[in-house]
Length: 442
Image 1 (cartoon, one colour):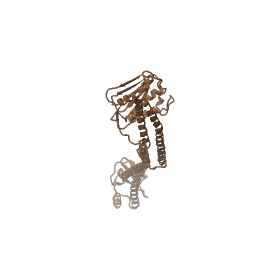
Image 2: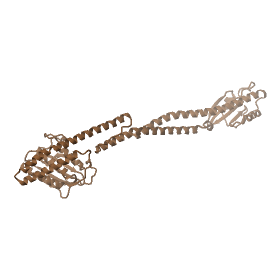
Image 3: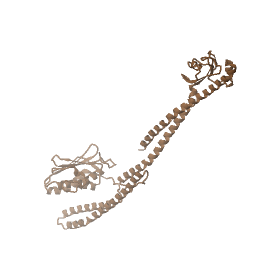
């Protein structure tokens, strides 16, 4: 914006300067010419008057003309022309204007190299028409334009100075407008990155200052809403402890020790995740997550074994395909486990018993890994199920939202499609391990 304001100021100032300097330059040139011609005309009139006065008694002779020129200091380019062609003073070339002046007409004429002023000497006993003595002054172009070039240079300098002043003023004005906008943009970027204390100092024009005040008010309001949401999540998580305690007591009454031990481990893991949820919810700001690498294939194998028990009970055929080697992803083991559980839970919740599913893990050439979960069920009614809160099967639609947000932290993304069996297929792409920006692939 500052650059555009500077260019606009340059254009406007240039137009104003040109509109001002062009006529002023022409006026200076005309005044210089008028001044030079006036000086020459004054000299010619003075010599012609002296010749007319003295020549009335004695007659105008070359000797008298020479004496008068001497009395006037022998001005340069001043000549006295007699009717016979004799010239006293500065020599002249051929001029077709001499004859017209000898006829009694005084005038100024332009020539190829300047201008000449012709004044006939009129006396009471002047010779017959055509034999009048003429006083001539020649003004060269150098004299006509004397001082014009210097004046034009000064005008150009003045114009350049005015343009520079206009650009500097426009840049200063642009700075007062742009700087608050830049600060507002930076504060919004910091706020989006998790710095909830980011605020701006309202400045600049009134409209921009009002935007800054609105941003501060919005940030404060959102900060309060986030605090209230954190407290609500923490309170809700804390309330889950009561049914978990009751569930633990019920598990302890089971007669099968192996089943009781397995369920107790699951309850312990659930309590651990609830404790972590409470701790995160009570944090005052968003903190950087520690980068942790986990093998996708190992976690898929572990969680698939957990869900295999329920699949066998419902008669669901299953298949697991994992490429050889490690498949590291930038996620905590617990987060990756929750992601896989959400995907498998959707299969069990939205397909009838007996519908099978497949899990596959493969590596891509760019170092990323892909987890694919497909089934033979009815498939997706619409791709809008990926949106938070959208579902066509009566659920909240938050499961896939959890998957999307989790995989985006690992620098990946999610793709929905149709499996080879006509059911739903979800491909979760995890970014390469060397990514540090955490941004999803385009």
